[in-house]
Image (cartoon, rainbow, N blue to C red; front, side, top):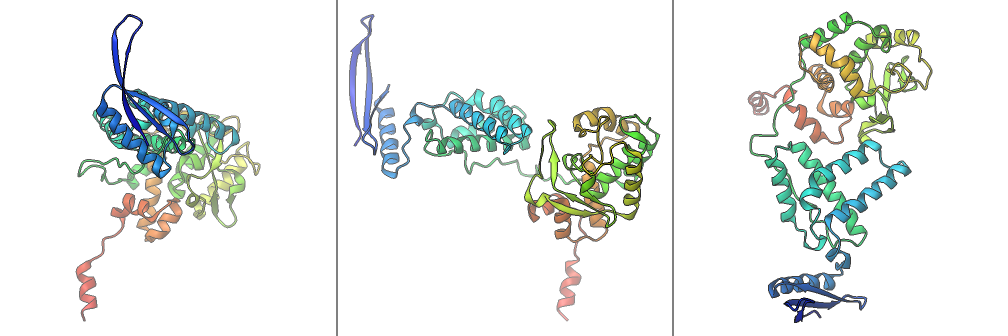
Length: 376
């Protein structure tokens, strides 16, 4: 049973002060006292505390710990996971960066016991007002939700107020259709690659081959740069995707379990890969297929800056490397691959992802002809 009493006292300067004192006992018999400036605030807190105690959801630290404290605690947990190898450096750095850049400045001071879903929605509105892109907003709210969930597990908070909060987009936005490079643009890329000076770090055919490999297999950059010769079966003509590499050189499993897949290679691509293996200095089974100058993994940001960006500029195009993945998917669809096969080849976790991104590329059914064929 919680009680509220009014307290009067004088400061050391003789000034009168008063506060409303909320006193309550948890299920373990531990006594707590909280001062509130107004009786209304004390009453609201009493209702909240009594409800939490009755349901077993009361957490004493929630009244003292802040969202900033939870971020600090979760950051230490991420460092621990990094050391254990259960999290990548890229993931840890990105999560900490999102929390420090967006959550801590606006919500870091809030007591966990006083944080509500409204605060989370206010954070979303603030980020949108500051022109933060929707993908980033969703990642930030996801990071906040994981932080609060960790706090719940550490008895710092009674619940995760970010769980279930949706980041919505204005009607008509977020539905932009993916437009892959055209065949003419792809040909222009290969032509420009053949005309580019051949740096020693890439050796004779590697630049064009890197492009063709990405555009035929649909592999993500992190997957392609992690591919070793032992991932290729050049006799059966296939590549097995099992790993990815981040910007810090940490090798990890693919983005999702569905990302582990086998993709068939065309005969022409097999011929070029066999030729490349005879030319490259790094041809051992454990060597990277597309290494840097020292035989290590290709750092994608460096590769883009030194080779990809100059290449697309020479070709007169404005394309990102990831567009080659979109190009690959478009060629599979054009070759009459079924949606489920496209999902498998692309390594998408769900069928919904495939159709939401590429559904518009599949041939439209003629519903009138279908109905006429049924009603005969």
